[in-house]
Image (cartoon, rainbow, N blue to C red; front, side, top):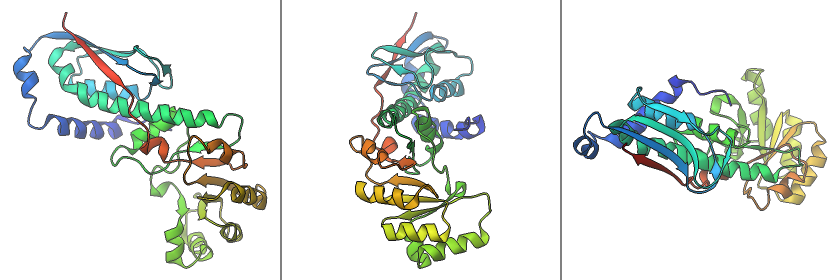
Length: 281
């Protein structure tokens, strides 16, 4: 995934800080004397995958550019219990005000990357590549898709303008796969590929004849996917989707599809168990 620019990241962080702060932090401002210096360490309490550390770093810097921050892990590093991820030194008030937002981002993204890596590990030895989906938390898509890429997946569409995916409801509205693809070919920029969702072998044949570049095999059985692979014979790329789990993803890959997409790597990823240890010298 392309590097996220600060222009994209800053509004996300600002909204999160605004949500957390409300009209002010009574506890920190009244309990902690201004000028008090502190040291904080973010550690993993359980095994996970280091991910999007720069987001947490950016949160601390947004609150106080004068903080001294050292990253002690790299994105994609497997980390074990009590592994140090980051150290922060400076104004105690600043660290405390940034703590929850920074940890929320970091716990979420490490969890997504860790879950993704588990799915990717199941594909070892197969040609199929794992794709994410657009089932992301509103406002956090760039970050969650960054996390899946760190975990080893490839990004599907980041937004609707990234490509064409003719789904079941589009087909119903257009009248048929053929009608939908014909209308796209009349006006679509030639650099964009057309992917068509198919839930039956008849729809696979129709998508092929209509001129689809990719076909998404939606909720097909293993035997149906094998037949689809034999039917297509490499003429277009095939993506398997629907109810993909850690238990069945290897069986799906064995059918010979090119891609397997899963929304579970984002929406079902448990947060990483991280903690910030805070000390005042």
